[in-house]
Image (cartoon, rainbow, N blue to C red):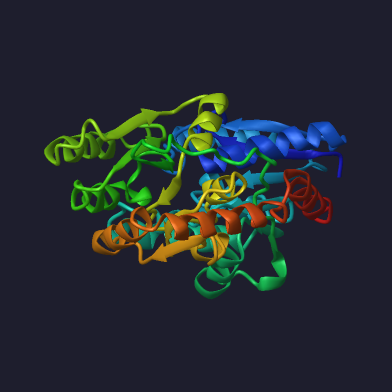
Length: 349
C-alpha cells in the first residue's frame, strides 16, 4: 500500500460529527506520518446526480492502483452496485450510520437506500464503524460478515471541567448538533414548553443550512411556544465559542432519534457535564448510566419528565457530573482511533 486516498463528499469543514471524525483522522495521520490525502468528491451525496456519479468514478479511478480507497459512507452507501463492484478489493468503507436510517425519508426512499447500501457493502474489503451498535446493525440488517468489520470509536480531547452558570442564574442547558430531523429538537422544545415555570435557558449549537425547512419549523415552534427569550439557536460556531458554551453549561441534552455514536456525548463527558439523552442508536451505550439519564427517542413527555427531575435535583446533577468527570480520563483518544483506521487500511492490499 502506497497510501490512503480518503474520499469524502462535500465540504469537509462543515460542523458535523461525521466531518469532524474525517478531519481528525487526516490531522492525526499527518502528525504520525501515515501517507494519506483527502480526495474531495461532489457535494450532492447521498443523492448524487448522474453527472456527479460519473465525476466520482473518474476521480476514484485516477488514484494510484496500490492506494487503499477509504470512502466515507455518506458517498459509498449511495454508490450504485456497478460502481462498488468495479472497486472491489480496494475499498475500506467508513460507516458513521446507515443512510437508510436517516430521519425524514419516506418508506420507499429508506427501503431503496438500505438495498443500495447493502449491495455496495458486499464489495468492501473492510468496513469501519464508529460504534459496536452500528457493527451489530450492519451484521443483522445489511448482511456484512462480522469479521470484515472494525470498530473505531471517535476519540475525544482532554478538556477542563465545566464551571456551569452563575449560582443565581437559570440552569444552563446545552444541545449540540445540526438542525436536521434526526436530532429531534422539536421534541426538546415541546418538552421545555411544559416546563416554562422552571428556571432554565437552552442554547442549541448547530448548522441551520443542512435542512432549512427543519430549521424554519423549529424557529416557528419556539416562537409559537413563546420561548424566544429562553431558547437560543446559535448556529454553527467556532471551536473556541463551542468550548466556552460547554464551560458555561450545567446540563447537556441530546434528544436525537438515532445516533451512530454520538460524539457530542463524549465531548460533554470530557468536561464533566451531566447528560440527558435518548437511547436512539448507539447513544444508549456511549454515555455511562451513572452520568446520564436516558429516555426513549421521540418522546417529548419522557424528555419533560427527565428535565423536570434534573432541574429540581441539584444533588443528583452533582453526582452525575462527578461520574462524568471520572469517566473522562478513560475516554478514547483520537490518536488511538486514527491508528486503528490506518491499520485496517494497511491490511487491505
